[in-house]
Length: 366
Image 1 (cartoon, rainbow, N blue to C red):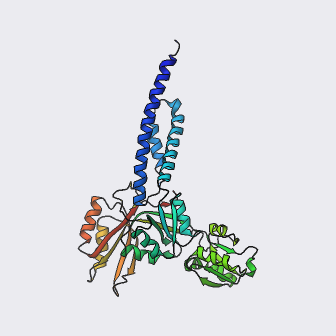
Image 2 (cartoon, rainbow, N blue to C red):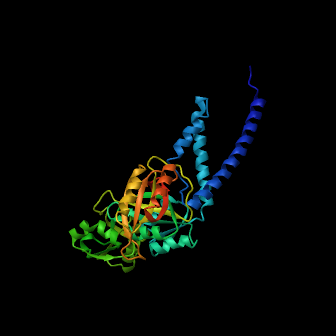
């Protein structure tokens, strides 16, 4: 029997009409997702989620001969959706501390490609730019695997109104950067951010160089570029060297080769719910009542409900002499009934308590 070409073409036309209808629905939904992600400071791309979506969608196809073609269609649709969301969020302003080429700048461009990175001269100014609605989001370093916590940012978390809905790890590679034609044996002094100097201390001491502190690594590189002094080198990123047309005299000079910085994304809104993995965490900050054993009692409540603290740090309360607040990173879901019961019981032991954010930690740009 000959195939009915007219009927087949009519079925294709009807299918194309349905595809166009549902494509428009899909892209409208993608626009809503883009607005949601912008409000809560979430990246457009979620590489961890994509394989699960594709696996689910392939389950809708019974004919194994066309599954590979449908896989191509799924991947194309995802790519178009992301491109549309990036376009819709092109005006998103992401604040950071430093200047172009700083590690925070690199993190911002990897997590939010297509957004507009906006530099500020301090952590506080960058943070306040979101509070005052100059920017939509701010990305700040919260901890380095070598140098530890960034205390000024932790203080902003405690005293400020913003929330953390994402934490991303960025490998940090420090490089020795000099003027064009400079040689390492002629260097006399090194300039960089204090943390970068500390992370490269062994390398610096081995060469007997004098150190100069700068507000940021990118600013240090700009200083070397402006001075044009072949005896002065900066410690910074490859990107900042390229931006300023400088030479890299030595690569990867940080003492720890497992040098990673955690960056947190802050927004004005606390995401009501998030698809949490088993490794999900939430950040809780609190102060305890002024009585003997108050901290021990508070920690015992956390343990009582089976929550594991991945971090516990204390910081002085700036407005009150000899008083401290506590920063904790806790594994689990703060929206669970178990967490709600824990927090309710903690209120009896704590003077103040606040959930700052919850997140699934991932690499920058993932």
